[in-house]
Image (cartoon, rainbow, N blue to C red):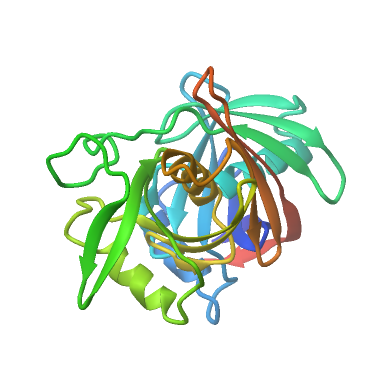
Length: 279
């Protein structure tokens, strides 16, 4: 079977997008397909696969699979790529769109076109209670709590932006941060596992971030992680509500609206290539 696809990325956080509306892909096991197509040596290579589907209530649904084949509820950079794909592939010429996700409806707005395609995403309200995130424990919230991993204790703040995050503030990035990220992802405290962000505060309006994503491992950027880090920084008194999050290949702008409680993320999506995958 030949599958038409496009590869896009947001700051190096890359995804294979597949139009399931204009292609008949019935019967495909997308968990298996994702593991094959995302392999960096034996496939195309990506952090995940995004399916473009017809929605039940809104026109479109974004269904995302991590590179290990597991489903994800939501993805910030993936949503930016999704908005560009819809617009450029003629599926929708509206610059404002509401898309269904496993985490609920998400609103996007195309701010600027052309190569540095800029999209603003309403990431909705952050979930802060342990039950919603989820995180095991008795206290209602999880702000600046201890987390023991082998012989080390981390202080973390838990937030959900449709998917769970453990945010850890550091003075410098540990050379073994990927190993710690993997251990924390699978820690007993997180019944659905967790994304992990190591965050270096530069000032009240700028942070650097290293992301270990649940089901994908280390990635060059993470949209929901940037939002979670901003929320955690505000809760810990370290950041203002408008923050620039710096990654190796660019930045995201995050705004946590005080009145509406919504988190807005603005970032770019670039198109790498279009092609046909022989499955």
